[in-house]
Image (cartoon, rainbow, N blue to C red):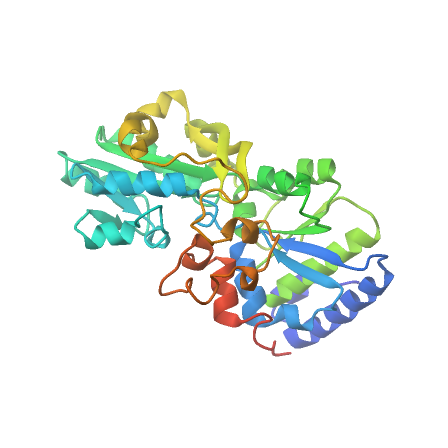
Length: 386
């Protein structure tokens, strides 16, 4: 189908464009020789837009949109949460974090519960705020919870460089940074997860560029499309994916060129590479994945809370076996939800014991979590307005 992105960027009639895209999508579905076409949106923001706009409800039944582990808070393992709680409990520490980490439950508590009990846990809107907190509290250890994908890692890297420039010896980060392309490949290799195409994240792609996904597509033979965040973007990405599937092309297409380039943000990539290096990382619901994490390089290890305060972080933590159900509370099936092996309503806790007021698992806690989307919008979402 010939769809002019330049016209779209000039505010063409979205209703007419959506109707044309749906017509094309329906036609491609009829041509593709599959009973079911499984497309995974990797990004949690895409998940919420899909539910909010009702995209699921208007697609041909042959297409199944599956939500992947695209929420950094959701894939952070319990061991990390418990470690952060241990730091917060210690009176010699101030923990700074983005707000979405506060209510994620650990084995027996949460950062919010510890904050209410008197722990010095501070919500920041930028890691940079941690610099002044460290300067104003020289007798405390200040730890920023560095949790995120490539979108937010540059800010953590700049935080470390600024701490070094200001000679702040009491500032640390507790790393749980992860990389998306390698995770996509791990999902593609998973024996139980059958995906025909990936709807690739927009925010991450701004940093790493569309070309970063090409190795995963080449190895997995599964195509991907970089996608924007409006419902029209999602329909466009689905149309492009179906075209690639029909033509049997395991390629990466950039349907978000108004923001994403092929090479990405070189300055951001350079600062990440200067401060961090690739390491193995544990993903809730998936387990330990080689080469999917970003840990501090040797030059900057002195800023690693995990290195400096290992005994505090690990104190009292239970042994965990790992794997798809690792780090989930009794009865919670967040691990399987993150791999799209089940839908949230299949979890016995969903909307009963686990809800936004009293979340049991991170998929309900995070604003990008798929369980939160299901709870807020229902199975299909609201009807789209064409």
